[in-house]
Amino acid sequence: MTPTSTPYFERTAPDWDSLRADLFPDSLRDRVVSAVRCLHDRSDPVVVLDVGAGTGFLTEGFLAAGARVVAIDPAEAMLLEQRRKFPAAVASRQLVLRRASVEAIPLADGSVDAAVANMVLHHVEDPPAALREIVRVLRPGGELVISDLDTHEHEFLRVEQHDRWLGFERDAVGTWLEEAGLEEVSVRDARETCCSSSACGEERAHISVFLATSRKPGGPAARPC
Image (cartoon, rainbow, N blue to C red; front, top):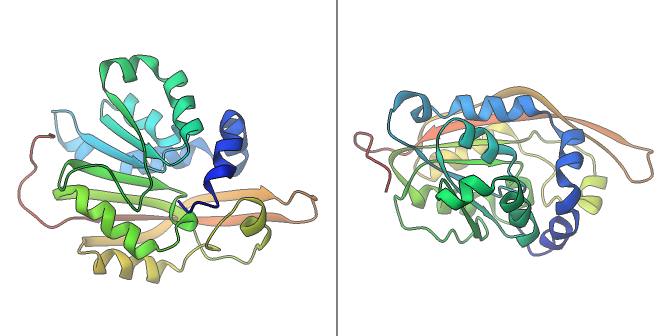
């Protein structure tokens, strides 16, 4: 995420779970978890990278599904909330927390089976570059699942919530994924809505959400490292 957005998330971390519940529903998490095919096709533990993990909206779902999760976020306060919420998973190393941005992921090439990013791209300065960095850490055959906002015109989100982008055209997201070297690209309606009100209460946003899935070319599924 951009440096200008990190202080906002540091400040809101203790209240983020309640704020998030007003923005988008738990059912979005279920859709993202269900979209990661290797999680359901393999018997050995799958390593999932949760990019811009926040307080663990997606992390919670993947831990419940038995995955090993590496959760990264540039806001230390967000990671502290995860440490408080999932102490057993942290202690057992089922959950590894790292302070980092999507632009510089502190993992080796080809080290995770899947990567997920929920409502992250619209805070990133250069989305195509961020996608290339995520692809770098995916193993051959690894999956990337993204949920984010469709394009909209609610400028108050840029000011109040430090959004860098007012959503995205789905065709553009598909092109970025393909240019990052991914295949089996699909960008479709997540059948969910993100809702937010301006601070003054004069504007209310109802924004549709897309779900993008893709896979890194390569050989057979490998055991997680």
